[in-house]
Image (tube, rainbow, N blue to C red):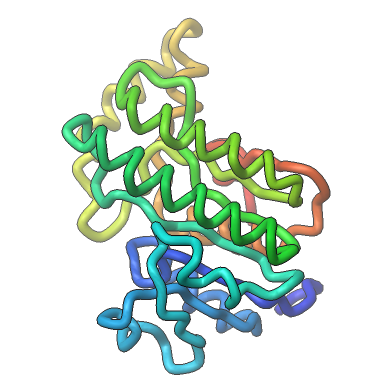
Length: 219
C-alpha cells in the first residue's frame, strides 16, 4: 500500500458508479471499509466491507457508526444529473451532504472527502449551486478535507460527452476559452478513482481542492 498508513474509511454511495470501484481499490490497498447502504443493497458490497444499514438523508440512522479518526467519503448524489433534476439536487445531493457533514463532525472524523463539480460553468446552474453549498458545509466542519471538482467522469454508461471532444479541441485554440476548456475537461473513471484514493490517503491539513488538471496529473 505504498508509504501510506492504513485508514478506516466510511463511504456513502458505495454501490454507485464511483463507489463500487473505489471500495474495491481501497480494499486492495489494505484499508478497512464501512459502507452506508439500504438493507436491499447490502448484498452488493464486497464480503470484506462492513455494511452500515441506514438512510443517507437521515443523519440519525447512522450517527453512531462513524468512528473517531475515520476518513469519511461522501459519494451520494443524483445519477446522470440534468437540468430537469433541479429539485433533487437540493433534496438528495445537498441534503445528504448536510447529514454526512453533521455526523462526521460529531464523530470527530479524521478527514472528509467530497465530490463537488467544476465551477464556474455556463450550464447546470442548479447542480453547481447545490454542490457549492455542499462545499460550504464541508468547510464548516473544520475537518481536514479534500474537495474534488470533476466536470464529467467518462466510463461505462457515461460516454455521450465523447461527442463534445471536437468542441474542446476548438476551445483550446483560443486563449479566451482555454481556461474554461481546462476547468471543464472530461476525465475518465480510473483517473477519478485515483484522485479519490489520493484524497483518502492524504495527510494535508486544511481543505485541498482537486480540480480537473490536478486530478489528471496525479500518478
